Amino acid sequence: MKLNKKDLLLYAVTDRHWVGKQTLFEQVEEAIQNGATLIQLREKHLDEANFLKEAIAMRELCHRYGVPFIVNDNVEVALRSHADGVHVGQDDMAARDVRRLIGDEMILGVSAHNVQEAKAAQDNGADYLGVGAIFTTATKKDATAVSLSALKEIVANVDIPVVAIGGINENNILQLKNTRVAGVSIISAIFGAEDIGSASKNLLKLAKEVVK
Ligand SMILES: Cc1ncc(COP(=O)(O)OP(=O)(O)O)c(N)n1
Ligand SMILES: Cc1ncsc1CCOP(=O)(O)O
View 1 (cartoon, rainbow, N blue to C red):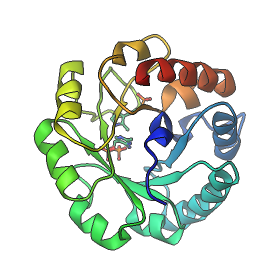
View 2: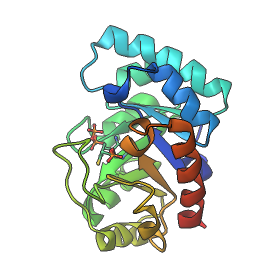
View 3: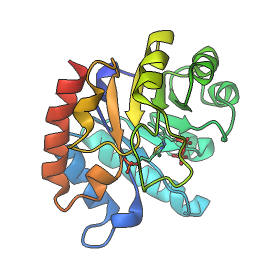
């Protein structure tokens, strides 16, 4: 499946930090039912076998709702779970190598923090860019800060769609208006919310304001 730009609108990235009352699957299903347009499975501490098992089940769940499914960091798990794509950062496998492994049909997302990284990612086969952290975040301790003006500069210098990531929530999301991003990528404001369904609904409404 190649990327449909519209699918980037409310891009939810998982984090099992808030698993408890609900399983990760229940959380993801609630997010999808209420507006998440794309799911990325992000597992930082799971062993390979369980990561693969979970990715297969998550891909099935996403596809039941017609939502694309992307695996964070692990190309092997993305391939073996028949995910729609994979997202890699600057410290992961090089975008060019990932593209060679996944072929032309799978989606490749790459993190970028400046115009140089963004252009290189585009040249090396990225379908979209994840740019951030735009706002302060507790979710990724080693995140590099990216200002709103740097985000705009990146968007202006590439042809592929860009999603903003990092600390985005219902209170600050409208600051992304006029940045020309294709969507917002969110972890804690969805999966850390008391009510994932109503948070997803509100964020979708606001994301539409940002992207229109
Ligand atoms: C959509 C999106 N954008 C950026 C990131 C961050 O990726 P990375 O820099 O590899 O950091 P980790 O997520 O691996 O901690 C992302 N995951 N998704
Ligand atoms: C994965 C990632 N990459 C840059 S910031 C970030 C964390 C996003 O999480 P949150 O939406 O909770 O700030």
